[in-house]
Image 1 (cartoon, rainbow, N blue to C red):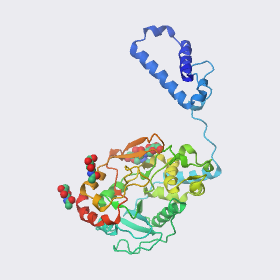
Image 2: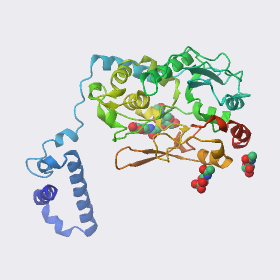
Image 3: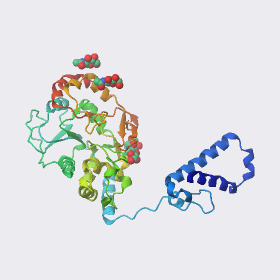
Image 4: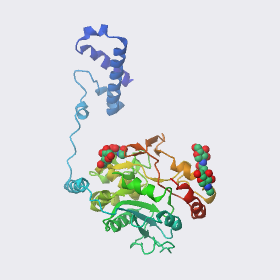
Amino acid sequence: MKSAQAWRGGMKDMQILPAPRHRAHLKKPTWIIVLVSLVSMFLVCAYVYPPHNSAACYVFSSHGCKGISNWLPPAPARELTDDEIASRVVIKDILNTPRTVSKSPKIAFLFLTPGPLPFERLWDKFFQGNEGRFSVYVHASKDKPLHFSRYFINREIRSDKVVWGKISMVDAERRLLSNALQDPDNHHFVLLSESCIPLRNFDFVYNYLMYTNVSFVDCFEDPGPHGSGRYSEHMLPEVEKKDFRKGAQWFTMKRQHAVIIMADSLYYTKFRDYCKPGMDGKNCYSDEHYLPTFFHMLDPAGIANWSVTHVDWSEGKWHPKSYRARDVTYELIKNITSITESIHVTSDERKAIQIQQCLWNGNEKPCYLFGRKFLPDTLDKLLHLFPNYTRI
Ligand SMILES: *[C@@H]1O[C@H](CO)[C@@H](O)[C@H](O)[C@H]1NC(C)=O
Ligand SMILES: *[C@@H]1O[C@H](CO)[C@@H](O)[C@H](O)[C@H]1NC(C)=O
Ligand SMILES: *[C@@H]1O[C@H](CO)[C@@H](O)[C@H](O)[C@H]1NC(C)=O
Ligand SMILES: *[C@@H]1O[C@H](CO)[C@@H](O)[C@H](O)[C@H]1NC(C)=O
């Protein structure tokens, strides 16, 4: 009812708009446009001022809509804290420094695993013949793996315990990045787990990652309990709820982005202290929120917002689908590699589906380079199919 009154108020006050005598001559389409515009303005207003105070929102009334001055010119920005100013100036400077291109740019493959790497032999095939264009780093948090491939031998970095959902997961990612950053030839960084497989040949992956200027960091706004519902106000003032984002942890990242993560302690600390299991009676997982939120706040245009590592959530369960040997066929891989849209589903009751076209330097391209949740028993089939499915 309130809305209807507000609308009538709008209609009534319109009489005081200039040049009313011309109105009779307006043709129908013009009226429709005027009407649609008014309705739109009203809807915007109703949105900015939810029902409980919508009565205050008479767009055309002589009192005006008090808060309207807040959204027409942008609201004055919050005063940044000293730490924020310092942090932002460093990050901005790094991002604005043109990257020095080395003579032999490499992609660093960062394997985050509890122990053995069941697909080492598949990765060995993938890397073969591309010496000098990649480097491998392994963070084995529990058991030291036995290696079969020369590309993996002696590539382990000092590791530490990783507890699922805790900040130690982010710490391990940072440890991998900092080790890989030591080699100035590493231009792009890919985080992978022990259940990840390559879906393309090396050249395809190399060109895809090396010749784009964005990082493939997954990022979307989920207003539901598994998204913003995990936010804690203890993160204020630096991290506001409206900036809180979610995304899968499996990123690829350009060098500058890896460096700003090393430079960040302000936002990292907020997530370490206030985004953890059991925080405020809820479970928050830093590995799903820290990087998406960080990049959304500090370099939103610098990330693609989807992950190039495919995973199948379509079963709607707590965990994504794990592929077994019987699932693995040429057709399955072809299906995954032909996907050109990335999909996010919110965790609230609406289960809203957000679809994004995968644009690579502005052109539609397949979204995925890697696949995950493959069980070890798929290895033989994958080894057999690999030469076939990677022929461009
Ligand atoms: C990346 O390159 C595209 C064109 O190639 C350009 O439009 C875009 O602004 C660039 N993005 C960044 C973050 O530099
Ligand atoms: C990613 O999303 C942000 C909004 O959060 C947007 O500004 C940015 O342009 C998006 N990136 C690309 C590559 O479309
Ligand atoms: C591949 O995609 C087609 C068309 O969407 C579907 O009918 C088929 O079941 C899929 N096959 C596999 C193995 O996923
Ligand atoms: C290899 O690929 C072709 C299509 O290019 C397909 O017809 C054939 O069945 C594949 N071979 C195997 C072993 O899957």
